[in-house]
Length: 146
Ligand code: ZN
Image (cartoon, rainbow, N blue to C red; front, side, top):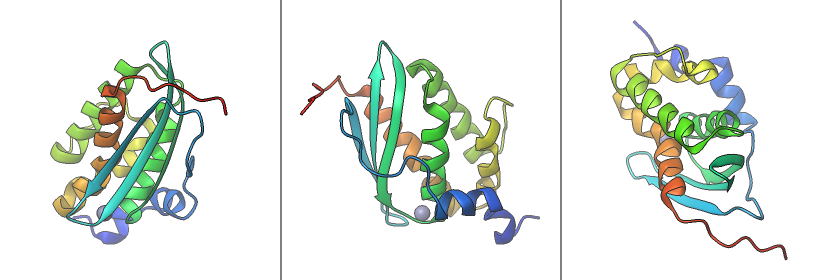
């Protein structure tokens, strides 16, 4: 049996208190916003994608510990990855969070595996990933250099 203390592992709390890649990005060419009404989590994602590779990722928003830590871990993980690879990770995350399956491909993201035991928190953890999918599906926006 897991309890809430297991859910809020040190790594998750660290990413919540000191989110990586937080703040807006100038020069992003893909953006999307996500909202999880069940919890009130909001995230706006900024990506710089060139030749199908995610060169940079940042986010801003307000959310609970799980939503914020998930967005922070995601931006760290997807930098330097190809779009298709990032979308495969999304599928793996979804499988882990909803079915409790781990594929071994998720690395540090597996700290969120415990969320599976708390169905009301699953949408908090998947919010950033759904927003990533939306951002990647957007057409490239012109990048201003000003
Ligand atoms: Zn939440």
